[in-house]
Length: 95
Image (cartoon, rainbow, N blue to C red):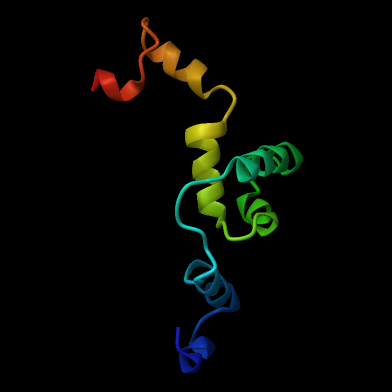
């Protein structure tokens, strides 16, 4: 975002765009250490404070944290998949 345009937007938009467009964001696989930290932070802050959780995970955005939790780390994720099928097959196989 150009410096001249920053004055045209509310502060929260400038802050969000600066973080999202930052080259410091990690794009790619999560490490085991990041997964452990995310699990600990979700226990501490709950499943709705993703921006606050992301501040403690250097290089990760709140959306990345939320998606990692809901798609891979949530404790009952395998349980939910088994409920969808009597054979406990992944949901995408049934499609």
